[in-house]
Picture 1 (cartoon, rainbow, N blue to C red):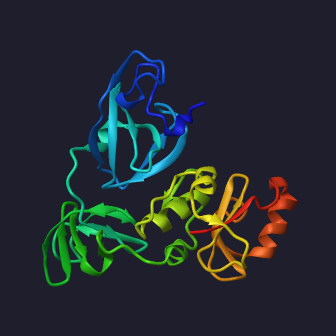
Picture 2: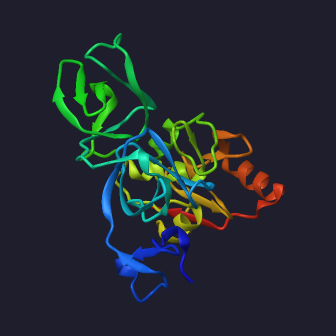
Picture 3: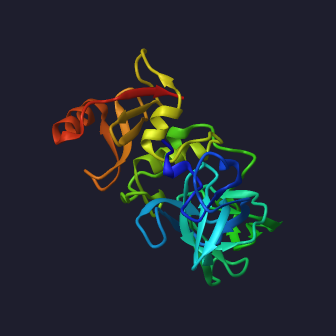
Length: 271
């Protein structure tokens, strides 16, 4: 049985590599496009519920543009629909936003009009370097707020902690709103580590099972939930109980989550 989240196929068409595997009207080669808005919902159907989110600068493979909605596959393999008007021809990104959030300005001056507010992880293209600003495809950005793509972070737990206090948002992937698996994706992707999008995929695809004691960076999985250890006793996780990204003693979290009816820990993983 195919997972519709990872299978670029609908009733009208499918990706060429699925020929002979799925039934549809035709098979097509996709083409690359780039997200042009700070945060965009990736939906299960045109106008349907949010599954995940994509950030500005992300490259997707488009298989169809139909009635204003594009059927796409993201870099992590996730499939869905997003408004076609949020896509543009791709350019080569060079940097990511490395702070909680930034503004891109009209001029090399923090008093000039702000053109767009960008979340952590947004991708930009630097065209020129000034004294305190980079000139980018989105405007002028303080140099200290960007990081070269070829110099990823090294500690996923540090990135998870950067998201402390971010409001909980089901399917969220940004510092504007994030869920449990979005927090893990943001943390690993910033460190150059490929990461599936949803917690069940992460449980199946990341790391190895633990026997030894927990340490910083280890992942704890429940049914439909995941968090990351910041030390031997403390979990950080985006959760609906607090409606935010919060720290919680791991022993307390285990007891609380099981008591509220969501079951025991299913896996402990080390990356």
